[in-house]
Length: 81
View 1 (cartoon, rainbow, N blue to C red):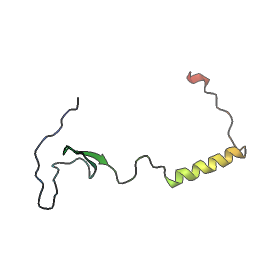
View 2 (cartoon, helix red, strand yellow):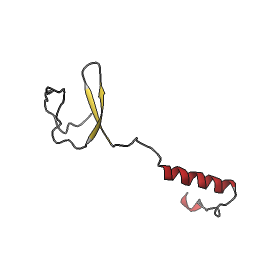
View 3 (cartoon, rainbow, N blue to C red):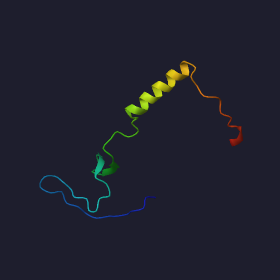
View 4 (cartoon, rainbow, N blue to C red):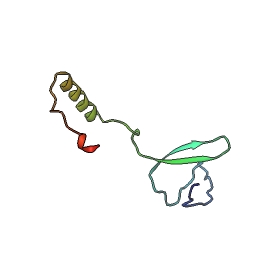
């Protein structure tokens, strides 16, 4: 069961906008349903789970090193069993 943190009625203004009182986030993803329900989910201004260009470049370099045999010594993880 969901816990309700805030509940109030809102009116759409002349420009078809609704004001969120005390909103915790700056951006929301909105989903509208045929029954009139509107769901707001907090979002950041970047695609979720995106891998940065720098990380992709480091992964490419690491794979090239592996193919060239440029690797470190094997790590013994048997102590973690």
